Image (cartoon, rainbow, N blue to C red; front, side, top):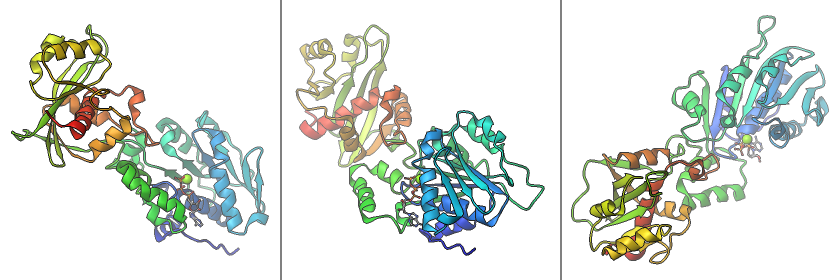
Length: 394
Ligand SMILES: Nc1ncnc2c1ncn2[C@@H]1O[C@H](COP(=O)(O)OP(=O)(O)OP(=O)(O)O)[C@@H](O)[C@H]1O
Ligand SMILES: [Mg+2]
């Protein structure tokens, strides 16, 4: 049978011909990862009568609208509808001439994959889609389910597709940083997919102005620079003198329990901001805090501790609560303002640097404050930058 395929790019074509054991395709959204892997599965099944394939998503039910739909579409596009039986219940695709199968599973019981029985040949191909939602343990158990390859000529191939995730995800470490399984690594951007519609392309290009880290992740498919980190910064040994500066405070819970009170000093020089951690403690009395604060300088702060604001105001400090003096705004908007600066952080501001390292986008591009990542100094830094932008330092 003659197989005719259209490729989104030469890189996609190279993946089609790759016979490495493990093939890892990561990259931007809509970059053609699923289609090329689907094409490879259909082609391999047609060309080798012993190959059956299991397709894995974290949740079995996700297959229907994703992997299963993609494979169905490819079969149509290749003009092979008459050669395959595409079943909805159970979800499976059968190659008519031989009875070879493509079946769909989740990771609820990884051991079960080993038990799947095929009428002809064995399990020689596994596709993990969106592997960042799958645990390392499930991945390793399932890839341990391949059939032996002694009886006939065949290779066992693991195909992986995914969008980049944050640096905390095991996939980043195992595939991108160390390539533990010696996979062939493919990285695709929206520009690699010549079939991407103009509308899609415009959507991604717009992101460039709206949210640059997200653009890098979703349009360029990068793990490294946007590896979840919301801010990029450089550490400096000292902060230049004689720059305009402000202070800012994010109130914690008093009485020595819960969140710390966080205070920062931020100095401004054109597009550069220099940030220094001043206080970070949940045992700080207001009298003690006052000793760290400057006179005649704007001190931006959250509004949620009115007694503290009043106390310091009465003590003569230029407190600027963020709702009265200047609107605090949405977190994402503030983050974007800070992202527009070159962020320099004093090297010994350890808690601040720890917070920066843990301030991440989740895989949908949302800020992961819901996970209770400490972000008190970062909130204070944000108030300082917005406050300075709106009303200056004094
Ligand atoms: N070979 C091809 N022939 C025709 N269209 C293609 C081809 N490859 C990709 N496309 C088009 O590009 C779109 C995106 O491809 P695909 O779904 O494979 O991307 P993806 O990288 O898996 O995206 P996601 O990250 O959203 O899962 C497809 O819906 C299709 O319109
Ligand atoms: Mg996909």
